[in-house]
Structures are given as C-alpha cells and as structure tokens.
Image 1 (cartoon, rainbow, N blue to C red):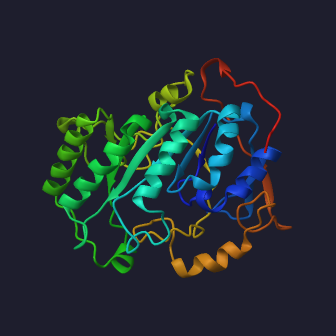
Image 2 (cartoon, one colour; image 1 turned 45 degrees about the vertical axis):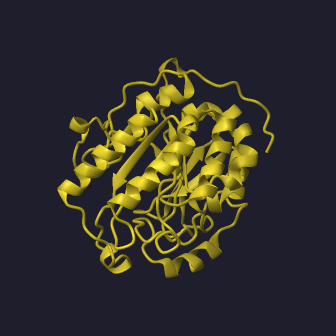
Length: 315
C-alpha cells in the first residue's frame, strides 16, 4: 500500500509530532469522510507500506527525523515552492527559506526522492506570466542539483474560489501553452525533467511530460525496487497516479492558501484543530463508542514483495 502524507492537509508542517508517534506505534486510524462512523485501522509497520509519499510546503519540522524514516521506509518527498507571498499563502515560509530547507532535505534522503512542485500556477494583478516564469527560473537555478524532477499545474476554478480569490484572473488556452513552453525551456536549461500535474490538457507536443505525481516510474527511481503495473486512479482527466491511501482530515491545514480546495472555511480550522491530540491514533477527534473500526486492506504493489529490513525504532 502507498501511504500519502498528505495531499489535503500539511501534516509535515503542523502535525509532525503526531506522525512520529504513529510511526513509533506502527499504526494509525483514518475516518471515512463519507461515512464518518467508519474508521480504518492502517498498519504502519515498514513491511506494510510500499512507499510513504510526503507532500508539504515546509519540511523543517521533520528534518531532524527524516533520516531515520528514510532508513526504515521507502519514501518520496514532494516539496511545493510557489511564486506567491503572504497575500496568497499567509503561513508558508519564504521562497529562499523553502529553497534552503529543500537542499537540506535532499542531502539527507538523496535527490532521487525529492520532487519540486510549482503548484498551482495562477494569475492576479500581482502575479503575471513574466513574474511566474522569473520565479520558476530563480528556484530552478538554486535547486536543480537537488531534485529528481519538477512538476507544475494550473489552478482549478473551484466554486469557492469565486469567494476566496475574487482577484483571480482566468487562464486562456494560449496562456497555458505559453507558460508550458517557457517552463520547458527553463527546465531544459537546468537539465530538469518537467511534467504537469492533473492539468486539463496534455502539453506533450511542447515537450512537457504526462501528469503523474505518484507513478510506477517515479517510485522505482526513488526506491530502487520494482512495482507492479497498477491501473491509475484517474482522480482527474490527465492524472496517471496509482492508488494511494491518505490520512488527511478536511479543514486542518493552517497554511491558509487562498487557492486551497481542501480547506472549505478558514474560520473553521481553529475550532477543528482544537480536537487534535498528538497522542491519539486519529489526526482529529477521538474514537467514539459508535465508531466501527475496520482493518484496511493493504495490498502490496511491489513485485516479489521486496522489503527493507526492519530496524528498532529510534523515534
């Protein structure tokens, strides 16, 4: 099973103590968002996790522990560094701080396990094509020796963005093509493999590779094992990611990015995270008397079930 930490909240930045406790005890619970009385028990022992996929905008809290995690688990680290400031991403570290942390992360876990995300691209009066491309190249110049590949996406016009981002300027098809072509040119200059993430269109004719953030190819390059041919989950039209399990909970991210789809209401976050207990098997809330705990089916995607040797926990 692939475990995603985490696509819909920034566990690394805000909940690293909870995660370390879960890895120490080798299990966690995850509540079904559609049927909240159903709680899945996930075995976190290294032999049950084919890869632990991290996604964060700030790896600083987990840096002291990532070496130990990397020695016990197969991992992949998506690091999101965008072009925006506090008006769009209020609680995200600066670009230079993020670059410094990415380099430290890469030196610990190897660059094959680090993917740089420039995600999502968006236009406002403060952020035009020239600025986005200039920032993309600035970051590329600093990190190209420390990453496996780079990916980008275009912001999706969720309904709530009309309220949260009234300043958003819609992309035209020509805008997207121009950005894709120039991002490829910059990536080529720095010898960076570049791809999209879940975009509505393919840009392969402009030498930008397909949308797959968690693919067989990426996992094999990162972890030097052979994965099975697994059918993509097709979360979006051009998404080619293979199935993974997330341990997220909605409205728990304090980054407060204005374009976020997983935070429905920033005002709710403060109340919800009061229910967070670092010692609890659940990220938010506790197990109730009416909850039904179900063992997660954790099928391995690795050919011949190749394993890391399990070491005594150092957490």
